[in-house]
Length: 403
Image (tube, rainbow, N blue to C red; front, side, top):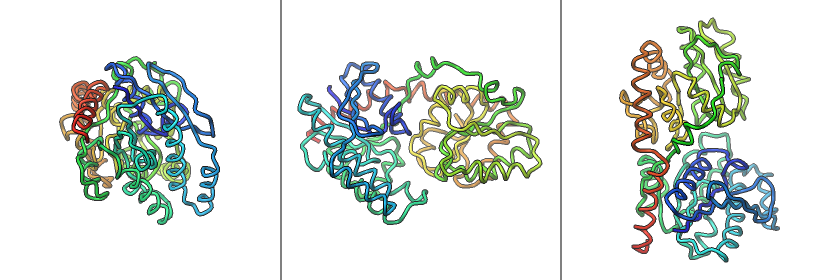
């Protein structure tokens, strides 16, 4: 098959989150299975359509500099930032894929719903398209400090880009149910989780993070990795980390971008005023190599998110064979089976996380058993080629049926 994946997010230039990570893994896995794959990604500045090739994937980047594109800047004056982003994505992706389709006859074009990449192509062309649900604006924007008008407009723009797609998939049963119940999608939504390239993960160069970041060499390490924002549960970590560090001589390590200065203004000053047996460390935003090295150095990975679908932060912790304490919300119970390959804490309840972390701190055998089981779960069900093959089977099923 000849497949195009559209995603503004795509590393390294625009690799901001899980959608870009998914697209990167999916593109390479599809190539491994013998398919021709083109990726149309975004750019940080206006640029003509340019291309490069990586690991057999042809990657195109484009960002429009049209009058209409420049007119979207006015939305910023009204703090409609998310809506502005979706309209810019929609126009750039439409113009870019229109140019590519003059030269290439794609069997299928896949795009995420979050970003509205498919708004114009799904409404003004006859392309065979699939929308993959990752994190719809209507479901995640309430966790951010944004204007209500931005939530309504952005959600409307995204939905217009969703409704005319020919096929739908998503990474969890949870989000499939949410899309049907809250977004009004009545057609089939196939659940195909995210996948990870274990061979590449295992080959990633290791950094001695304890030495590099001056972390205690003799203390058990609890690791949190993600954006320092409410949706990721960072506000819960104030109570969680304080309770743990007052009781145990461990290192609680945080890594991730702190756009809202939560660490500097709230969590770290709060802990500074406490009498702690353990220590807290904030490493800032790290490279992928450093994140993976931290996962390998850690004993426990904690994921207190209030909303998750099928996050790569958890998949990578599982691939590293770590004991995981995760929220029981969203798609997490589809990855973590409580007591089998990790522990589930009650969403939004710091005390539940403290109890689970204490259990793991005090029981090395349990940590090791859960870590081994987590790695085995990835090996059996979440490798990149296994997931790509599931995708290909669904693509063919829908295309053969005229879906």
